[in-house]
Image (cartoon, rainbow, N blue to C red; front, side, top):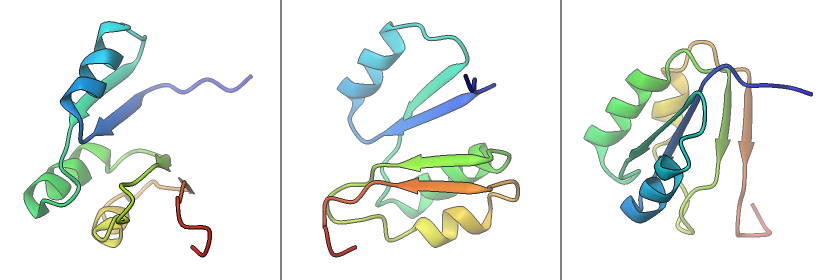
Length: 88
């Protein structure tokens, strides 16, 4: 079985982040981030720059700033992207 060394979980909903935080999962850091905010995405890019895998379940409107984020993640090897739109 594969185990992750560190997990950074980001979500736009404070309630969802609180629920995850209350579980006190080992090696999981969670944070509320507005993926539509340039400033927040830049902050996320800084925190995520050494991550190797990104699992992304974006808002229904998509994640327009994904390129900005991915280009700063120098160790990124895999992106798993969940889409609600069957055409994408």
